[in-house]
Image (tube, rainbow, N blue to C red; front, side, top):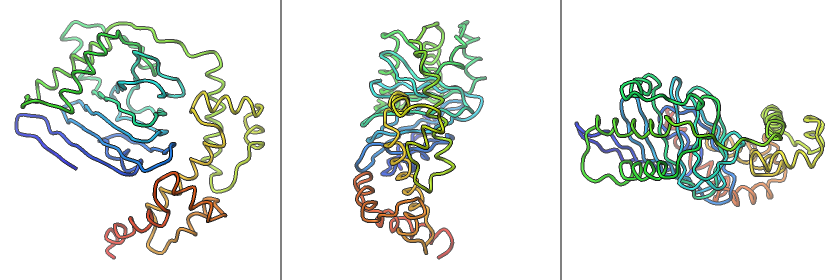
Length: 323
């Protein structure tokens, strides 16, 4: 972790991670959990600036992810990916010149592709409302209901350019108050005009409910195998509808979702294992009975053997408990 700053400039923090969940925990004051969807070693980088009443960052993730997120209460988050293709928020695909938008204290889900970059702006609502009142700007309140927001192309390009220059490639020292004012004005530009986004299709609500019902069921029965027949019976839909629902909302099939969810849960368990726990014990607890196939699938997904994940984190646990 690289932290820099001065008495007059805001504190900057650069953090790198080689595990998706470790990377998720690096973002200050967020509650997050990341599941890795694409195979290979993970790399993530976070460039973050701390400001009074605000948080500004650029996040890079090298692998496709499913992210469960919640930003700090009484705030507003705007997420700006330079490239929108392949990204979803709450099951809705992001279109060109759209940004993501969610109020603090509310869970939301992101699905992001390989080699994904996103700029993030979070602001306390009292700070945002005071800035809008001072500038005589009326804010569009629909950001509280809709997860996507259309922005004029020129405005979005200007804000993206500004964020890259100030967050990642700053030239010289700028006072914290000036930083804060610049970022607030950028937020006001994004929020003041009413810009309708493309409506979700009529089938969206039903497909989202099908996926959410499966996710709730899997959370309660993840240690054992779950069949497609059981999921169809649970959701009262055909295999085809189940398939369409998952590919539309999450971009993966139901079988891929089940397999990847279990593999990511095993990885978390290996990273948090007690000194006396083994790979076999943890894998079988999560329903992986064919250990040779499990080891092959695990290495293909995360770029290392399960034993490497386990051994890399046992010393840290031992130090924590005084071993």
